[in-house]
Length: 85
Image (cartoon, rainbow, N blue to C red; front, side, top):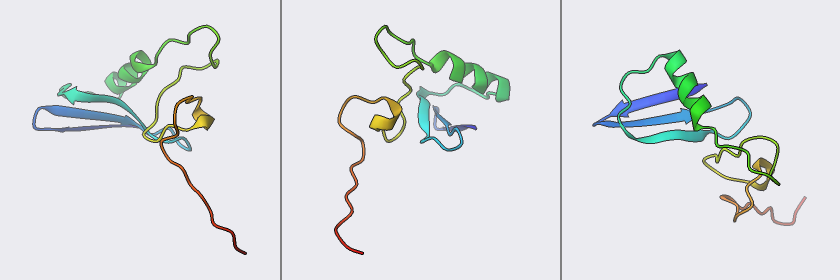
């Protein structure tokens, strides 16, 4: 599902694909009113190319990048569970 928020001359387009962490497709100048086809086209062109020696799918950074998504930098979120029952 793709959400398009507009206000004050700014657009925020967020893709929330089911079980995956949402990712920002656009955050900047107002894109104007977009229907579902326009949002789907934006999502298609926002997908980066797959470089050689990389994972087999385009790397789209989520709001919280993790190793599970192919992110090779520092994780966006670190969780620790203390010892206990």
